[in-house]
Image 1 (cartoon, rainbow, N blue to C red):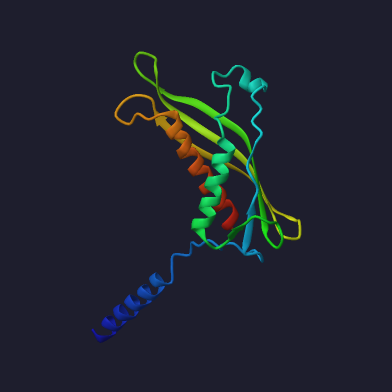
Image 2: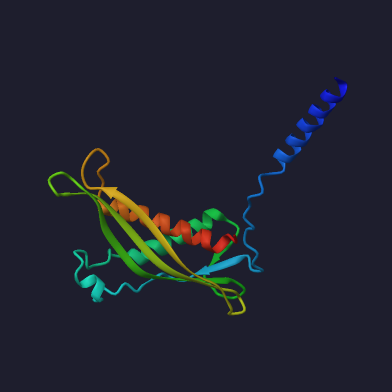
Length: 180
């Protein structure tokens, strides 16, 4: 009986220690020698004259989208805090972003064939360069949001744009600071 209690006690302690040590999932975090980052203004490279956009019912890009995204990215990095946002490239990482696509698609129709729900997608090519001028990362980041045009959860496209900008900026921050 004492051996059984001892085994249960050892097993319980082992389980507790193993449980406190974590589940094995972790992110390595960023491993850059620089502790500063310069964020270049986002460039809007959406080609509204392309063949794929010609037949689309949405042929323009939102006004000042790139400026709003730049400000939101800077805010995300300031809140993150581990990389200080600076205005000069010297001894700093340099992040440049180009908006390549702004997509709008219908997800759901009402019974009377009116659009009920839409999705916005923002595609951004990011490039991170270290202080030596070498490209560390190049990654396509896609932000998404959906919104309702009718019903109890109805919102405007402008509000949805705010959501997609926030989502895209969050994904850009994650792409820079996390190594999987």
